[in-house]
Image (cartoon, rainbow, N blue to C red):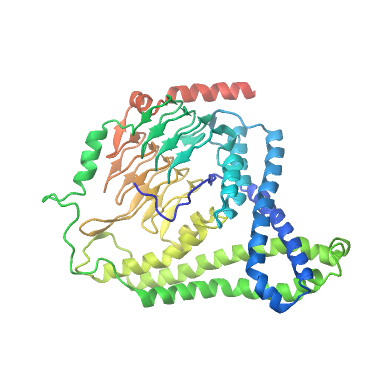
Length: 520
C-alpha cells in the first residue's frame, strides 16, 4: 500500500480530543508563539527606518526569519506547557478506558493537543534540526519512545507507543537501539524493543510487546503471507499474464481544465476576500498607528494602546484564519449542491471509453471537494473535517468519532458513532478495467488501525476492529463484534489475535481493572 501525498510524513499527533476545552489551551499556544515574531518584525522596520525599497528587498529574508522564530518559540511554549501538565499528571504506561473520566486517557489527549501546533508549523521548511527536535520532544508518543543512533524510518511507517484498540488506549514504551532500519509502511506496536543492527523489511508488523533480536532480518508477519500475496497479485495480472493492460486509445481521465480553474478561482476568491479586507483594515487602523509607530521598543509595553494591539494581533489573525476555513466550507457546499442538482451522486461501474454524464460529473464533484478536504486536513484545525463533510453533505460522520491524518473518500462515506479511523486509506473509488464507485459504510464503535486500506463497497458493522496493515477488497462485508487482519482480510479468533499481534483481550480487561484499582 502506498502512502497518498495528502497524508503527512514525519512526527504527527493524534486528533483525539477528549475535551473540547483543550482548544482554548491550543489557541493560547498559537497566540504565545506568534508574539516573539511580532517583536522581531517591529525591530526589523525600525532598523530599515521604514524604507519602502529596503522593505521589499529584504521581505523574503524577513519572512524566513519570522518563520524560524515562530517555530522555535512554538516549541518552547509547548514544552513549558508540557512540563506543567506532566507535573499535574505524570504520563505512565498501561491500559486505559477511552472515556473522558479516565485521567490517563484525558491527559494523553491533552498532551497531544499541546504538541500539535509546533509539529504543524515546522513542516513548511524541511530543516533537519527542527525534525530532530520534534521527534525527540513532540512525537505523538515521544515520552515513551527511546531512539538510538543511526535509526532510519521508512516513509509511511508508524512508531506507536500508544495505540487505540477497541474501547482501550494502550500505552507501552518502545525502544529502538542503534543502527536500526525500518522499511516503509511498517507498523511498530507499543512495547516493541528493536535491538541494534536490525533491518525490518517493507510492511513489517512488530507485535505488541515483541523483542526483535540483535542482527536479525525481520520480515512481514502474516497469517498466510504466500496466500495473501498470491491473492493480491491475481487481482493485478490479467489472464494473458500481462502486468498492465494494453493502452486504450481513449483517455482514462476527464480533463476539466476550464471548469477546474473557474471553480478553484471562485472558492479561493470568495473564501479569502473577507480575511484579506479584514487584515488590511486592521493593519491600517490599529496595527500600524498603535504598534509599528511606537516611539521605541520599550514603549510597546509602557503604552496601553500599543500593548493591547500587540497582544490582540495574533488572536485577530487566528480568528481570520478560522473564518477563511469556514468560508471555504460554505462556498464548497454551494458549488457542490449546484453540481448535485445537475447530476446527483451515483454508485456504479463506469468505463472511460464511454464517458457518460455520470462519469464526467464524478470528476467535477471530486475536484470541488478536493480543495476543502486538503485545506482542512492540512490546517492546524483538522478537527473541522467532520463538521465540513457533514455540513457539505458529501459524507456522514457520527459523534465522538476520531479521524486521524487519513486519506478520506471525498463522498459516499458513512461513519458511525464512537469510531476511530487511524492513519489509513479509505477510498470510495477504484481504478480497475473500469472506474468503480461504491459507498463505504462503517458502523458504531469500530477501530481501524494505522496503515490499513478500506476499498470501495466495504461494509463494516459495529464493534469491528482492524489490526494494522489490513486491506479490504471490493464489497467486503465485515460482521459485527469481530477482529480482522491481513491482505486479503481474514477474520481471526482471540487466540489468533495473540499469535498475530501478541494481544490478549482478556488481559486488557484485567489490566484496566488493575489500573482502576491503583487509582482508587
